[in-house]
Length: 84
Image 1: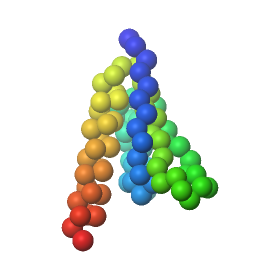
Image 2: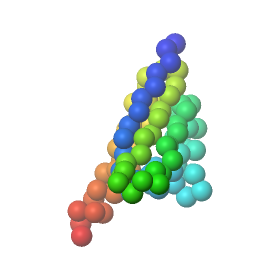
Image 3: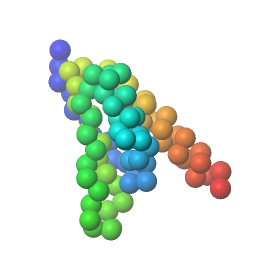
Image 4: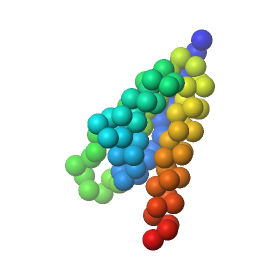
């Protein structure tokens, strides 16, 4: 087995969807894939509008599964934004 780490840069506005209410969605991601997932702290610098999601696991499929789940969440958010 190989250890793989992937870092994905996401807009601040999407991190709530990734974390979920009370951390429920990020917990689901961890439980479903067995991977480690961490989101960087929001910067006190108002210029930075992005955060980093770190995904780490023993096999690459964990990372691919999580990226797919994140993509679904971001697609829902984008649909909401563009509908207005």
